[in-house]
Structure formats: structure tokens, C-alpha cells
Image 1: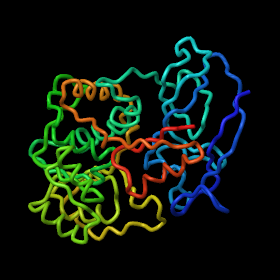
Image 2: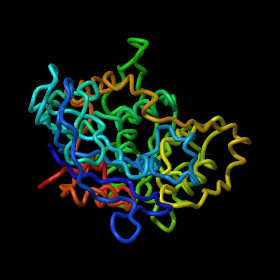
Image 3: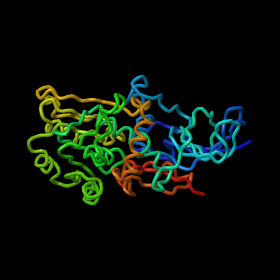
Image 4: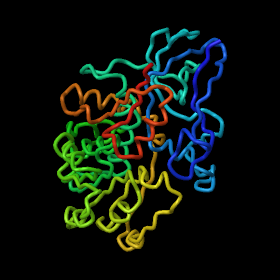
Length: 366
């Protein structure tokens, strides 16, 4: 019988989640795994994906009724949900042998038993890139950025685009996609793929001067504004003089409110995330909401799951662009944190303190 350590959801937090003290959000337990059945595999987790959306999966029903979630909320006293990269260490599957690297929803488990049909086997990435990039650029992060920009936002060459969280996982890819860093011949060649047309200007928003420098110099944004600057809102008004066409929103809150006043008539908000409010039970007050009406704005919410059937196609687009030297995948696009299993929640919480650049990935160490 194989035993595993598991982090379970023991309480629903109103504010920042915790993993110690008298009333922790997460509790570490040990439990037995069931013996393998035909068609199943036993895996050891190597990397966990850390995603802001996970915070919404553990919200209290007072904050978000369960029928308004886009995924089934994590039940109390069950493993915290997460995707991960794993090594197959035992197999009763005819299709996935021992030693294979797979991607699957494994939750916060050290070891897990999976149905082979629920695991995705992974091919090595070009240019010697590690498998961890399947959790970011070549995973749902890249998918979200691509379809958010190209399909939901319908970015065009004449457009000006602002993206918040520009030094983050999704935002960093939005900058590259919007700036046509890897060419624009991706569509209109088939009905399945949309064309990426470099917009006229990309303005990033990030949380430090260093991050802004990275967004401009390494990712290609035309400008980047530090939202922690005391003159941020004045800087935003100057940078968006003449107004902009698209706002790719990863943060919500006061920045979203400000951007409602900086969009052109018929402008579009691509509503991807609202991380500024995930650890608060206070509602966002949109003082500029009337401009949605007066300027005939569109606020388009979407999630990566809407386009998961396109994931392989987008991965192939990015791999081809990488091989052609038209896509930048550098250290800034992921932040891999070596982590003991007992510190898994500690690394996950880095999502909310602004310390990481790019995709936050947990690498499990002994």
C-alpha cells in the first residue's frame, strides 16, 4: 500500500489563506492510496502549477455561490485542486509506461493514482526547454493569452492595448502576442486559427520599476507603468492620451475602474482575472461604470476552459514560432521555486505578494 502526503482544504478563507495556526485554510495529512487497477498509473509529482484562479475555487459560498463557479468548488476536507507534472513510477496501462512524464490534475498530493485516460503524455520541447514550461507558455497560460488577445479582444493592427499584470504569466505572453513578436502569418490560412496582427502600441502595467524594465526590454512592450508609483494614475492618463482600444484585465479593482475611463468608444475590456480582490471580501466600487454605457464599452469575460479544445493547436503555433526564433521564452517567463512538500502552500501564496515574475511553478524537492 502506497502512502501519500496531501494538503486538504480544511477551512474557507475570507482573507489571505493560511496553512498553520488554530484555523488554517490548508492542513497537511497522510493517507493511503488505493491499489492500481487496470488502466491506471501511479505518479510522483514533480511540479505544481500555481494559478490565481485556484483562489476562487476555495471561496466561501457567501462570496460566490457554488452555482456561479465555472468549476466545481473544492470541497472541505478534500485535496486542494491543482495541475501538475509527474513521473510515472508504476503502470497498469498499455499506453503509458513507467518513466513517462505526464501532465494531469493531481491536486496537492505527493503521489497519486490516476486513470491513464486523464493524463497527457508530453514530448520534449525544442531548444532544451524544461517540461515545466508546459505549465505556462505551452499550457493554459499561453492558451489564455492567445485566445484572450486574438479571439475575445479581436486585436487589430490599428489598436492600442493596455495589459495589467504584464510581468506575470498571462500578461507577459499577451505583450508578446499583441506586439507580433513572432510574426503574423498564423491565420487566415485556415478557419481554425486566427491571425495575430501586431497592434500599434502595447502598454504594460506591473508592480515595480524592475518589472516594468523587463516588460519593455525583454518582452517588447512600448511602455510599462509601475502601479505602485504615487503618480501611477497620472502616468496612466498621460500614457493613454487619445484613449486606447483594448484593456486586457488580470487584476480588477481600482486599475479596472481607471481603465474604464481610458477606453475609446466601443472599446473592449478582456476580463481574464481579478487578483486584487481574491483575498478580500470587499466589493470593488467602479466609479467609472457609467462610461460602460456612455462609451458603449464591452466587458468580455472568458476562461481558458472555453478554448481547451484548441490547446494542442496553440502549442504547435508557439513551438513553431520558438523554433523560428520569433517567440521569446526566457527565465522571466517562469519563476520555479524549489519547495519541500510541507511548504507547498507557502510557495502558492507568492501569487499574491507580487514577488514573482512570469509563471509561478513549484518544484518538489526532498
